[in-house]
Image (cartoon, rainbow, N blue to C red; front, side, top):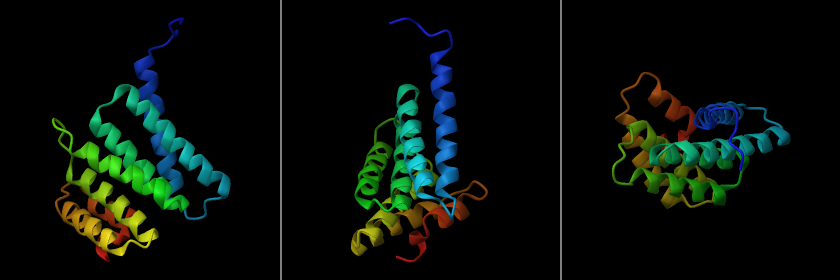
Length: 156
């Protein structure tokens, strides 16, 4: 295969970040159309693909949390739970140090998908774990963002 005329690692990073940001913009959009919902899922998958090329387990966990959140917002809780489980498993891998925000978001995404699936005991379990992690967030605005994205953390 012919080598590209650009830095492939930089390209993967650029696309990972851009697709990530686009997916989150669509996740946060309240009046998303069906086409935008499809674009949200495509962007989340594209971001994950590019992070898998250049990142480690922490980036994989974050990408899976994005996918879990996107699938939740699209109403596909089974796929959402699949990716939330992947995120939580990645966060347990040896050698990585997830932040409380990482843990809060992964558990929040799982709780939200479990609630959508009418699995209230599981939702409560993950909401509790997500709430505990969110309480440990020290960065400005992280706790508020967790509450905004995953309000289940505070009502399950």
